[in-house]
Image 1: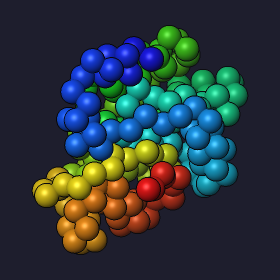
Image 2 (image 1 turned 60 degrees about the vertical axis):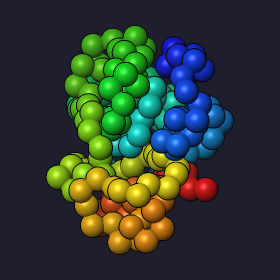
Image 3 (image 1 turned 90 degrees about the horizontal axis):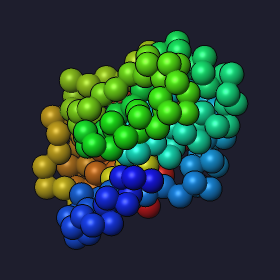
Image 4 (image 1 turned 30 degrees about the vertical axis):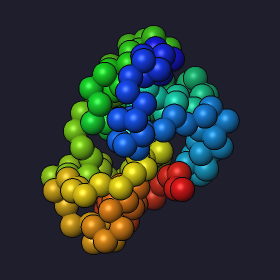
Length: 169
């Protein structure tokens, strides 16, 4: 996509240090199928990037159900990167028109303890992988020990008791 093309020119060492990795479409489709078997009406894509995971979820749902979820505000996009999240939302608007107007966009570090997932939610994510000496405000005991970002994402999901499908190394 556009963002991935732009990232080709970005500093690859910095991208790797931030733990950003692209989710292949075939992996996203498998994850989407598992996600839709979980309970919960609100779908949260953590670290959504340009949207491969949420687009796969909506594709697997089918057009009518996807438009309904979008229109009803059941889609939540989380990403710390403002460019990526804007591109993701633009793609949703391009594909689904006005149905995408009610997408909930959280352009924040979702590891912050002040950010909470909605009730009746389920999560799909390919979180960043990498060691981080400091984490966002939160009490992530395992992540503080391991310094692994993906561990902090898993801990937050568990702490908030939200089921999900998440890639781990």
